[in-house]
Image (cartoon, rainbow, N blue to C red):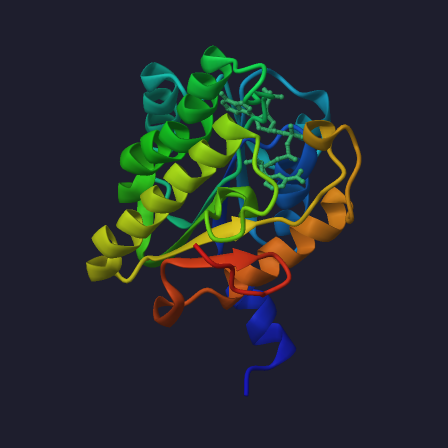
Length: 232
Ligand SMILES: NC(=O)c1ccc[n+]([C@@H]2O[C@H](COP(=O)([O-])OP(=O)(O)OC[C@H]3O[C@@H](n4cnc5c(N)ncnc54)[C@H](OP(=O)(O)O)[C@@H]3O)[C@@H](O)[C@H]2O)c1
């Protein structure tokens, strides 16, 4: 049985990188990971006073759709050994059957599907063996769970990132790096027009619990933040 001091000491040694952390769920992930005693590195596309105010290390100028930006992130992590990489950045753009917007569909692929792949490809070598990688997906990417249709680009891009996550789980297994695809719930953020069932604060707390729970026996899991396993 670990003493509270030993638990605190082991948490102190966790270094977590949150990609896309200036607002919404990503900001809360960075804030609460720090509150839990983790060393946090947080990225943002543009300078953010709120994020700078957290007292975590911030890497600015990281657009997940741009190779140069992600290379700059990798360069800035020289000498850093990550225990956890959480890729949160995402966009939701409307595209319906009656009003299809194919540019919006493509943009969502670029950010939601290729963004996490680009980040993982560039940064996975910074993760320690035995580390953890989590990607924020959505249950809207579940084909089995699609009971309402529509949202073409968002659903397609999140289904695609689920495929990315499963391949990462397979490719990183020999280094005992466990991978999770995490649905945060329906969260009150800019993305949802501040409608939803839970606050970013509540969602981030549950998501960090899931990352704590993640182990190789569960690699490739598609989890709701509440711990429910979701259908593909
Ligand atoms: N809210 C929900 O109910 C819900 C449900 C299911 C899944 N999710 C997923 O959870 C994640 C966070 O969502 P949220 O609700 O917190 O959304 P949000 O409030 O709209 O925040 C989105 C975050 O992603 C960043 N981002 C967007 N495009 C980016 C790019 N090209 N490069 C780097 N960063 C970029 C944004 O940065 P900028 O400020 O620079 O744009 C912002 O930090 C997303 O992956 C989303 O799909 C959310």
